[in-house]
Length: 213
Image 1 (cartoon, rainbow, N blue to C red):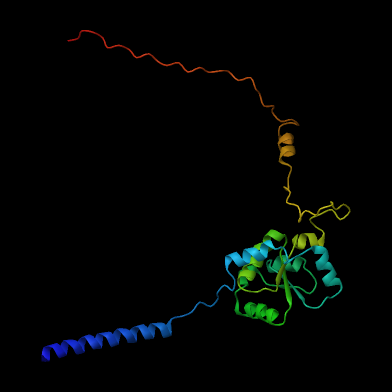
Image 2: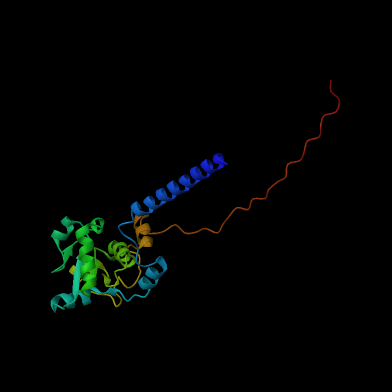
């Protein structure tokens, strides 16, 4: 009987020790520093709504009129930023988005209801950072279409603007047919329709030689 009590006490001690270990693990478990505030589906729906895009012309009006409630964020490297940027913008390279001071900046902009407009040299450069901030839960973030290249006038002819700007119409940058023509002396090889008909011939099976050793 005494032996059964000893075994019961040992089992109870093991259970208590295991519970203490689990409790300590839960208390000391480190939580991730950053969590997504929106699911991938929610972010995708916001991106496809096209409500968070502003054109270079709209950006110019905001800057020229000093419209309150907007802050432009240049996500390029400091060298490109110094070469040219939007007046009043700040430089936060995408690689440093998660730095403490930058997270505090985005949080403060969200708290103050200030619209953050991110831009790169081209729109494709800023698409990733823009969607990243949206998925982090910053609903006040927009993107400038065309990028700084269009804003500064360096990526289009200022004396001729097509009816639909390039950042609205997905057009190839190069005319590959013309490139092939120039490389082939001005003409492309014509497709021929004179094909030689090949008729497969079945090989006849040779009969085994009679006789033998």
